[in-house]
Image 1 (cartoon, rainbow, N blue to C red):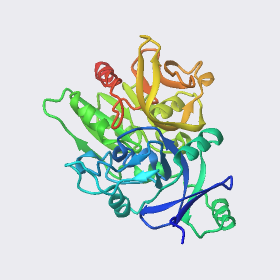
Image 2: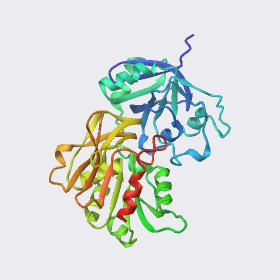
Image 3: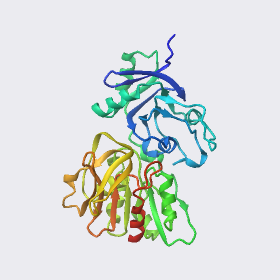
Image 4: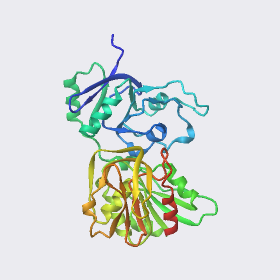
Length: 357
């Protein structure tokens, strides 16, 4: 009898066998890889991974367990987790659950024992695509038919955004910021609070008129999953508010600001995910090592004439990593300055936002 009880089937017909953990279920997802060496709890609780199957390139995952204080959202929305080796006996004194227990509680399937080096190379060479995680006895023909007949959902932001307005206040605050929640990580809210901002978090489809009535000092647009063109509500809101408020966007928020100003976005071959991407600040020449998680990028050629200019570039592939308006009151970055997980080279951007307020 084979040791393996689960397998992955990709659209190109390739198969990868492994052992199941977490929820025992089938799932069709978009497969992506992450190059971070630590921070798997923050990664799997990041709403930007909604419906995606994450391949962790670091070989050992789960060794320090799951800790109640380290979640980046209350919901675990990823589609599946794929690792080389999973540790079911964490050694961290802070852990309250194992990784497998968290995935089972969240109804997320996992598979280990997979040749993740080969799989990451496949995604790098041929791009992100649909994958089926299923039982080892599923035939290739059955798997390919399921992949062909399953459409990936495009309502991820609507599902992971807040359903109602909520507040995060800090003592002796100096400013009031409205944050549009497209799937926001909690460390962003913590950073804004730490920089003296009371934060009012609103659902992604909140109209501009409602935000103006709150009389905020500035507007923040969060990270989130999927194609930025799938959330026209936010784009229209930003079109109305540009020039009215200082703005700061991160990741999906960066792409939405670009679209609101008239630029275009496109899908990357395999995206940027991990805590080791070098980015150059064009104003200072400084190189930052950044944490990233996105599938889409802003088309540099489309920026001309929009009132925006490129402020940061990725040194690995020269993609646009930051934008700012001519007056500097609106700016955005493609990467995650709040980290969690990742390097903390870029927290100065929160200082820049507060200075604009």
